[in-house]
Image (cartoon, rainbow, N blue to C red):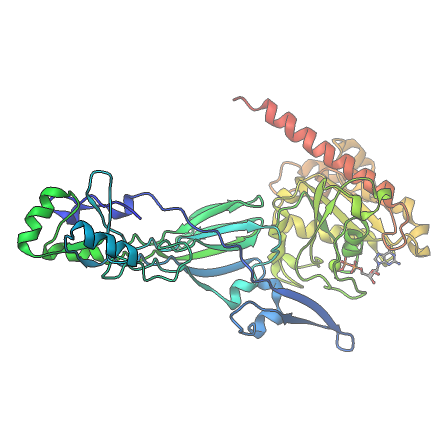
Length: 488
Ligand SMILES: Nc1nc2c(ncn2[C@@H]2O[C@H](COP(=O)(O)OP(=O)(O)OP(=O)(O)O)[C@@H](O)[C@H]2O)c(=O)[nH]1
Ligand SMILES: [Mg+2]
């Protein structure tokens, strides 16, 4: 309850919005959405079964179930903070001591007084604010396509007796509505201005403020009023004041949510190369794995850490890996699953390029993916990377492993243009074209290492982990050097 100090004659000057917010009640969100992928093996179509969909009871639009990759990282929502509760025009009769005691016993009618004897008039409750926060338990924005409007509760009203009529648990003040989103969500307003980048678990942003509660006024006969005015400072009454009794409306805003997966390592490669199998082999993640392209429709996250010999349960998080949907030629033009998820590489420090070494032409496959990255964003080719030649349990892969490693090392410049020139596979005029705007694949850095493994059969996984860890270390060392070389 707030002690109201009445303004002088012109009450309309009050800046109610400038008053500080009242404390709010935290109610953790309960609604959880479960997603299971099932597959119809005959026609190779992905089917997504939804269950336990929040309290809305609505079934997701069919476009969501058919093409979740188009919706998982982008959503537009409208949030409305709660309105302020109304104050009241109170009938107040000055009671003598005896009457006051009786009223107090009944527990109604009697207004509280401040230490100086002035009356404390109750105000309507503050409407609930709306806060968006990063929750590790969430991994997509899909649910915001099935429910896109969020309302916080309104503040409680004051009744004519000066008591609370609200059913709110915390008295008059409405609880803050807290909306969980995946870590890595950027919140923008409708003009496209970024309000927050919720990159760490627990990061939050207040997106809509609840309305201020209305004030209460005293209604009393003229003769008593004079006496009361002399006695107390917070009594006022004229027709124009009435407006102040109403609570203010809560803010309503339209917001754009954009998810950019937060991961240290991005797993890339053609469909079927074994990216998800790799993630499952070295982390606790349980991605869908199958022998046809585009099994993965949205990024899967896994945490790397500790000594694998301790078992997955003993891993302590060292780095986060994102297994992305497979890339195909023309992905940057929208082929396959398109370019939607390529933006999720933006926050990675290291790329792990997984190549199926048992296909007809692994080098061609390797170049295709590098080329797609270049077409999407040439900066991605500047990023440190490790190449994993997978499926060496198969003889066709095992036999040509050494030559594949050599060839991959040749595609890329380790600062040695002369070496490139001497390589018959690389056009001789290449080094003369280094000044042209568009760099060729050969002009970008070589991988930090190329390692042959079988993630399915567990062959050379330790070596691969060692290479990934050492590459990660190099990335953090170089970023530290870079940071220390920047003048303060
Ligand atoms: N023989 C062999 N098969 C493997 C190996 N790793 C993965 N596979 C198989 O390759 C197929 C594709 O594996 P995934 O992990 O789903 O491949 P992906 O790269 O995630 O595929 P997308 O999600 O479609 O991009 C599955 O049938 C795996 O069992 C391996 O080391 N050896
Ligand atoms: Mg996959």
